[in-house]
Amino acid sequence: MNKYFETGKKILVKLQDAGYVSYFVGGYVRDLLLGIESGDIDITTSATPSEVIALFNNVKETGKKYGSVTVLMDEFKYEVTTFRSDGEYIDNRHPDVVTFSKDIMDDLSRRDFTINAIIMDEQENIIDNYGSKNDLENKTIRTINNPLKRFKEDSLRILRAFRFVSKLGFDIEEGTLEAINELKHLIKNISIERVMVELDKIFRGKHRNKALRYMLETEVSEELYGLSDGLKFISKINQELYPIEAFIVCFIMDDIDDIWRFSNKNIRLIKQILDLHEVTKNDIFNRFIVYVNGLETCLLANKINVVLGYNDQEDLIRELEEALPIKDVCDLLFKGQDIMWLTPLRKKSWIGIIVDDLKYNVIMGYLPNDYEVLKEYALKKVKELRLEMGDTDE
Image 1 (tube, rainbow, N blue to C red):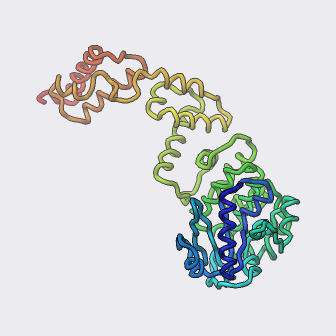
Image 2: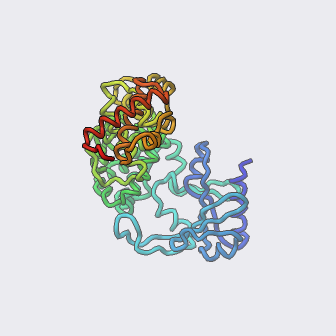
Image 3: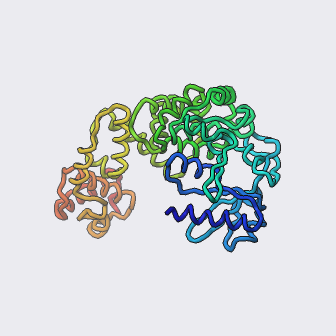
């Protein structure tokens, strides 16, 4: 028994016992009919958010303004949304007004695609008002009613169509595809953060390449701020790529607009991989590269190189990392503090230069990690550096 599903049924029954209409709706029902495991149950109801809150013990007001609250029951959570109809869409994304309704058809008619407008009651009876089951059987993505109207209301639905292609491998119905092609410019009205969320899901899908080919065919790819060449390349390869890896490939293929928003961590990673790619695409990794960048980052750079058709150096990288005589500067047997104890040198920047020199020579195998050997080398370098800098009094 699916405990998550059975607990959801209890919510439907409690709503109905209180006099409200309620159904499972959307992606969970779709995936259930397709035999796909899903962990996200949505419930639609005639009860208003306030009525839902009054009925259940543990409710989070996650989107009360728009009719949605989250009901927590046992260890599970369920988004419960009031039947609603939308006013005019003023920015190709959001309605100017949301009106709660008692009619399920008001709610279903505002949804994006037929495959997401299927409802199911607590007895697991399917209610299909838009030929949704037929579209599931024929593996077709089709908007509800007029596709031009649907995409003008919310242009994010264009990217959602590709996301469902990537997840399900379905075909986009001809009229829906033509509307996407005509309205592709509306992509520019979507916040870059939302675009990146959808691209993340597209890149992760089992049918990624099919979705990308649709994006190229409709020229939606041309609206994605420099990604087009990279998406064309990725659509022709079979390697699995995480979203950040796909973006790195796109950065290498073409100049990407600064509009893309990455975390500071990912910005550093992207730059690091781009630099590593330039250094290693036609040359080999060495100990120092592996030491400075770390095993995982070097393996990622190698993966990008391989995707782009360069030699696979994974075995070499792992051998180099395994053979490193030190993993960190702290592993040096002669350290910066030893320089301070044995010499009059006190400038940290100068000491740093010598320690870096020691570190490089040890990593590359030019010097053993031996206290006496490193001491002799370091004291010689201190003398040379002080002479070079004219620092004979310190």
